[in-house]
Amino acid sequence: MVRGIEMVDQDPIGKSSRSNPVTYVKAYDEIRTLYSETGFARQRGLKPSHFSFNVDGGRCEMCQGEGYVTIEMQFMADIILKCESCHGKRFKQDILEITYLDKSIADVLEMTVDDAIKFFSDDKDGKYTGLLKKIISKLQPLADVGLGYITLGQPSSTLSGGEAQRIKLATFLTKGNAAVNTLFIFDEPTTGLHFHDIRKLLDSFTALINNGNSVLVIEHNLDVIKCADGL
Ligand SMILES: [Zn+2]
Image 1 (cartoon, rainbow, N blue to C red):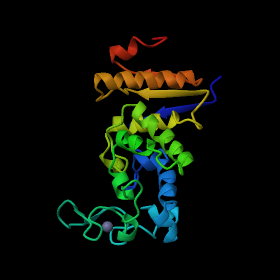
Image 2: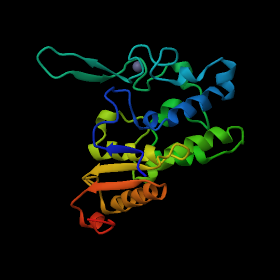
Image 3: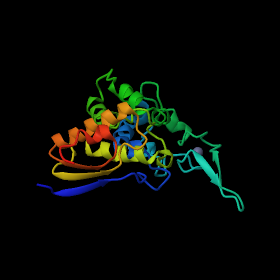
Image 4: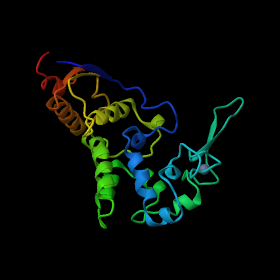
C-alpha cells in the first residue's frame, strides 16, 4: 500500500546561502553537540549554538557566519569577497580554538563526506560513542549515493541539480527515519553521472525498495531501464 508520494527533483536543497549538505542531512546538530562537549568548550561554557553559523554567539559577526561578504555594485554583478575578519572560517577566534582530534569546526566543514566519515569513525577515547555513531549514520547515506566527494559545508548554490537530487535521496535512506510505503518519482536521475555512480544510484533504488517503497523513474539510460521490473 502506498501512503505517500515523494517527487525527488533536481531543485536546490535550500534557497539560503547557508544551506549545505551537512545541515540538510541534519548531521550538523550532533557535530555541534560533540564540539560543545569537549573539555575546553565546557570550561568556557560553550553551548551547541555557539558552533552554529545561523545564530549569533559563536559565528563571525562581520559576515554573520557566511565566510564571505557580498558587495553590491550599482552597474555590475555583485562582488563576493572572503570575510576579512574570519578569513572565510565563519566563526570567532575563540570558537576556532576549540578542537576535536586537532580539527576545528571550520576544518570539519571543509572535509569531504568520505574524509568526515573516516574522521568521526575514530572513537579513540570512547567518550562520544553515541554521538559519533549518529553522525556517521547521517553521513553514510551521502557516500552511499555517490556523494563522498562533496564537502560538508559546501553552499547549496554550488551543487549541481543531480547532486541536490542525490542529497535528497540520501535523507530518505537515513536509518531511523527511512521512508516506508512511499512512491518515489525520479526525473532523469542519471543526468551528469559517471558509470560507477549510476551503479550506486541503482543500489540506492534497491535500498528504497527493500525498505518497502516503490520507485518510478523517468529515464532514457539503458543501464537503468534494463533493471526495471516494468516498462
Ligand atoms: Zn567572517
